Length: 139
Image (cartoon, rainbow, N blue to C red):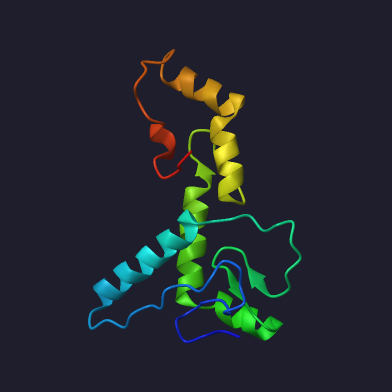
């Protein structure tokens, strides 16, 4: 069952309800509010791949009651923006690899192949610098 806030999950979802999207008088402030909601969704990402949950959107934590509910949710602006943001956050520009979740990306960034390529690109390592190749990714 999709609710009127553009993609909140049902009250029985263990992740809890999303804050409702507030209507806005200007498109730019509405876009900023939507971007903030997406950022909150992705920052609180919890892998649920081991669970078999029908009609569930792992990106938005939306729990539908039917295939139609899920299809309707996936057409929504919140889901499209969250999906686009997740794709950007789970792409390693240094290694040119796309990952399917934030957990995979975190694991990759800590991994030896990525770290070796990072040191090679830095010229042996100057120390003190962050990973400029993946600015949006958080370890």
